[in-house]
Every structure is written in structure tokens, then in C-alpha cells.
Amino acid sequence: MTQYTPDYPEMIVPVGHVEPVPRRIRGYAANLPVVDTVRARYVWLWPGYPQYCIPRADIRDGVLIDEGRNVALRIGTARRHTLRLGSLSRSGAAWVWADDAPPAISGSVSFRWDAIDAWFEEDEQVFVHPRSPYTRVDALRSSRSVRVMLDGAVLADAPSSVMVVETGLPTRYYLDRVRIDWTRMQPTHTVSDCPYKGRTSGYWSVTTDTATYPDVAWAYDFPTRQVMPIAGLVAFYNEHVDLYLDGQLLPRPAAVTRARWEQEHRSTS
Image (tube, rainbow, N blue to C red; front, top):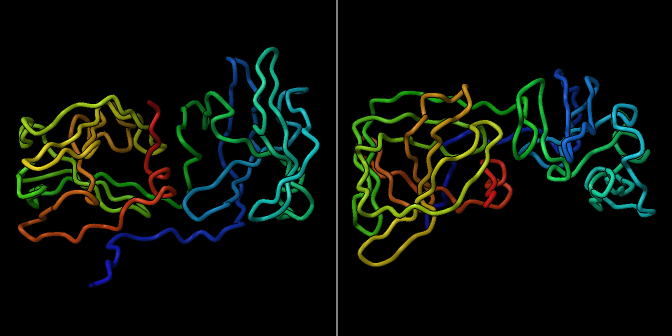
């Protein structure tokens, strides 16, 4: 069997890498400010994306309660803390980096992303995880034809697309809705968030003559301004369909791993 070779750039940031965050970071829980800093740092616990490290002085007083136990993480030891705001209590919400962590983050605090209700970089809300300064996302109009098939059925046949080229992910091909066979598409209740593209407005399962495949396609009706050309267009998972580009069948990428799926988007319902 021929081994699949990715045709997109992989992540190159090593685990444990630390960089300054050149933007104001704020976080809110229960509608109250918890974090407000211009001194945050990024740290990579895995190559896909970083986490914030926040100076203790830039966190609301009295909201972090020491749980009295340490945890061993990939780059050092940390002390677990509960986030407590009035009646709100979230255990394991944060950890304080110990002296065996990289010196630039020792003593600072990282939060479990969903322990904070809303994160902002400057005045823009960020979803799923911090945006990596090493990730590039381009939405490119392309006149190369795209045909999408599954079990021999044609799901879409388009003379052009908007290609979204994103570091560490297969290229996604966003197609005009008039080029899709909607008789094979069934809407689902899935919603997902992406730190670079925004929140999806629709997911669809696909039914062929032999089977139904859940959540194979999606759309962003109101994407972030960086990828506005994809607004209202529909993309299919290359991993789960046969995708022809200018008549040539593209090899299917390897099945989406959890880490890569979380990098691209996160289901919220």
C-alpha cells in the first residue's frame, strides 16, 4: 500500500517553545473579568497550537484556590487550582507552573480553555484555543474544477472553488451551493468553532445509495474577516470523500486525529 504523503506544510514549533504574546489578552467567567494582561506568553505543550501563560498579578484577586496537588505536564510540574467566583466553582481550571518549567513561564498561570467563558485577543473574541503566530490561513479563489464523489454518487461538481490553505491541515475546497446535489444532504445539529475561521452555520450528513455518512460537509455563513471569501460556501472532508481536482483524484488524507480535529474546529453541540 502506498503511504500517504501530506501535501500541506506541517507544524514546526517544538514542544516547550515559549514566545511573548504581542497583544492584550482578556478572559471572562460568569460575566466578570478574570484575566487582563499585556504580558502573556505562549507556550507549546504540543506542536499544533500554544497556550497562554498569564502573570499571577494580572489575574483577578482571590479567584484561584490551590487544590494542594501537583500535576506532571509535558514540560514541567504545575500546581492545580480551582477557579472560584461567588457561587461559580470550576475545579482543575488552572495550574501554576513550577520552577522546573521553562524559566520564562515559571510562576505564571495557564487556564484550561473552557474554564474561561470568553477569551479576547485585543477586542476580538477567540474560540477553541489561542491563535498560533506560526499558523497561516489563506482563502484563495481558484478556477480549478472540483468534483466530490462518494460511493460512486456525485455530491458536487463545481468549475471553481475557494481553497483554504492552512498550516498543518489538508487544503479545504469551499464550493458554491448551486453546485451541490442537495437531495443527498441532510442538515444536522452540529456546530463547531475555529480560532481562525469562526463558528459554523451548518453541517450536513450525506446519504448515498448504500449508506449515510454523518457530518461530512459544513459551511461558515459569517466567517472571520480573514477568510471572508468562504462565506456561504460548503466544504467536504477530504478524508471521507473522493475529491477530484481538475479531473485528478486526490489521495485521501489520513483520518483526522483528535489533535488535528481540535486544531481545526471544536464541536459545541
